[in-house]
Image (cartoon, rainbow, N blue to C red; front, side, top):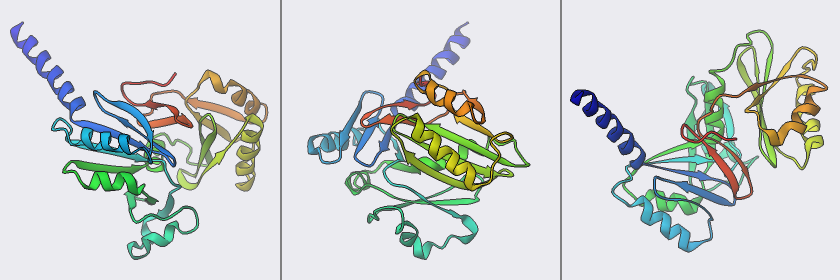
Length: 261
């Protein structure tokens, strides 16, 4: 019995240690969100008091590593076999404001290289501490998750991640990535327009091809009902780690300890 209790306490201590040792930062275009064991808040980049608070939190001895997820600018996605690091900044010229701090991810399957800009305010704070910083673009997390979900080796797979004011669409053909884009929307009619605009561009059949939503939430029932009138739909309802649904500064973080409702 004592051995079992000892093992249980050891396991619990390990979980506590894991939680204490990591902080997460989610960077959006106009604001960021910080989450650690004892702190959780959102702020604009111009709030000097909050930026100072971030510095103080990250300098704590209990924080050993920082995971930063970047939503703040559209990524450029390059097949890895064609990527040239000498022109890294040029990849961003057509779709985002280029900062002095540029990040690069490589997908888990090594097929895609993702280039993106980082917000310079937080980059300065992060570069001035001795913690281990792990940067990832939102698209990279989404792509890495989806390549484990693919099961259509003969045709298109259309995945949609729907939020309150925007949505992302990711397209694979014969299990190979072919398209990603994000669209701002005001209502379900705009959502329908952009969704079928993408399908039409790929000559997809609304009768045979299926639209797969990442998650299923009551507040989007009108969207699902409208799309289902014109196309087959399906849902991936399991927990998707580290994805975020947001509207302005109000959003929920979805991870292993927090399942979005």
